[in-house]
Image 1 (spheres, rainbow, N blue to C red):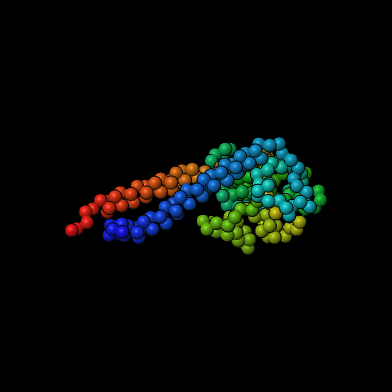
Image 2: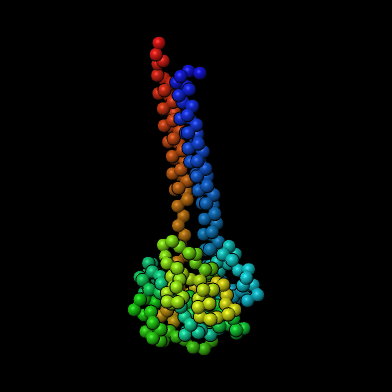
Length: 248
């Protein structure tokens, strides 16, 4: 083996490892692309399908994100406005009259069976946070709610955790709200109410954001492009080394 060829062994090994990593990342992004497209299709089908009755309490333990998230459901019951929790949010896409920073109004709905489901009745701006500022929307008696079934929001490093003691909420979590409000037999999911107007216009329903970022194809192209560039760079490097004249 010539000295020039021997000099390529270590760079070749390093390049091979880097190439395997880049190709692996590219194929992983293609797998993520297929998963994301399936998710988008599944959610679109659920959000546009006719509403179905809320799952019975006996089935609540089996409700999960893969099978039930964003399913349109309908339910009747009586709101307990005195036990509402307000979850901080920012509505960036204006669909109704109100947008910007504010709160989701999460209100327990008591079912005829005595169990509860937490309903996200919609958005209120900062200056209408207190229930006294939106009395008309505190509807009494039996009501019907149609909306999207939502699982608890996952914790995030970009948002503080809920603080029930201070009544400060940053994440939708039915069980946390139920514990803080002393409710038993509460569904482990919530319902995002649709855009059916509430008296007085607040809370403003129908602001659920059903948009999923899908950049996996671009990421895959980037990784495969880097892999191709690596092959080109190593090929030019090897050609230069092998093409060098060996001293006499």
